[in-house]
Image (cartoon, rainbow over all chains, first blue to last red; front, side, top):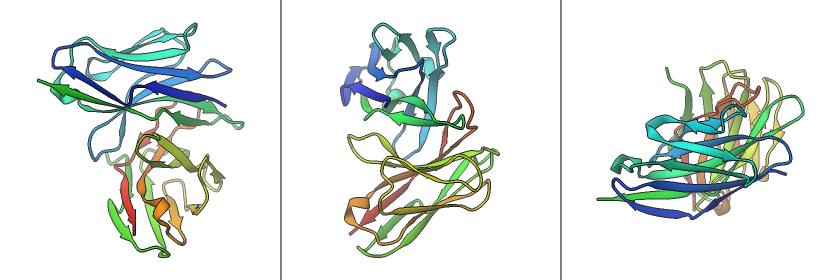
Length: 116
Length: 113
């Protein structure tokens, strides 16, 4: 079965500093990978997804992630943190079912705090 | 453009009471999902429906039932609520095929006392 591990349940950075949120996955087949963001009291919103095209994926709000097959990683980065980036971030892998449909397997999440 | 709409947003139940969480999507998606979110555990799949008329169990189905009423609506029922079901519940939908983006509702915060 596929699984996702997010290293660090809480990450704190200064405004303007680099954001690095780590995600490792296990999958026996080439995966689809996703990063979602959840702002307080809201649902999840897609930041970006990897679908086996380019290994460096750019998303919304200046975030990007790099797929590294040899490391089974899909870490999320942003060069310069903004106060509005404070949220919880979830990495997910898409598990394929018979019948052609998908189920998202989520990591436990990383809460990002940005301080002035 | 409403996307995925869940009702209610908040609910407090007593142990043993029943309730139904409603979900509707207006994106003509085939697949719909119910997740629960608990601190430190991410989102876990309760039930899903790959298409109208079909439902299947996810990782944590015990204590829940679902109904795919039509293509738009997918409800989650707690027959006899327990404190362990205190959680935030999310409904989601996607296009089913390939690396489809899942769209999430705003969530229902349920407390069972």
